[in-house]
Length: 157
Image 1 (cartoon, one colour):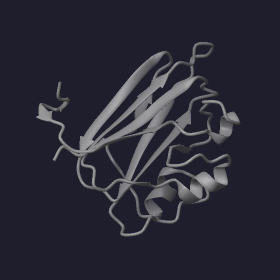
Image 2 (cartoon, helix red, strand yellow):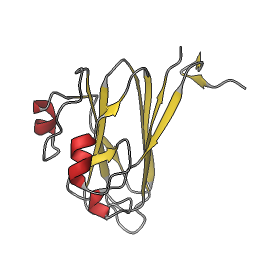
Image 3 (spheres, one colour):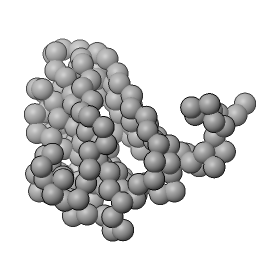
Image 4 (cartoon, rainbow, N blue to C red):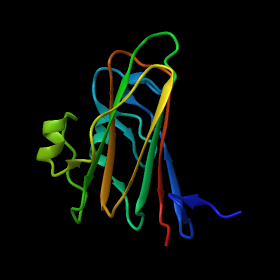
């Protein structure tokens, strides 16, 4: 049975990148009040490495979906997810501190608005386009535990 995305048959490649090891949670899927890169390539153990290498190479994909599940059952913490894109030839140097102003100064544009994921709910954002680099960052209203998320990239051609 073929797979369809937005009514179009998926004929190309698909890639799934899961939620990374969040530095704030010391290896557990916890988002705190410090914004950090949440979905990234590789397996990094420290924020310093994540910040230096947090760009995801997005070519040749043109259909993207970020899905986030906030299963913070013990608290009422929300998570705010931001999607950043750039068409720079090389990945821009990541700022030392992840913030909207710093990401814009590094050459990224925020794709859409902030996505707020309430406790025990999920949200998905889907978009199409051609981008060289994507960064997904997240920040919590408190210590939001038990997070699940992934970025799905596909090419329908």
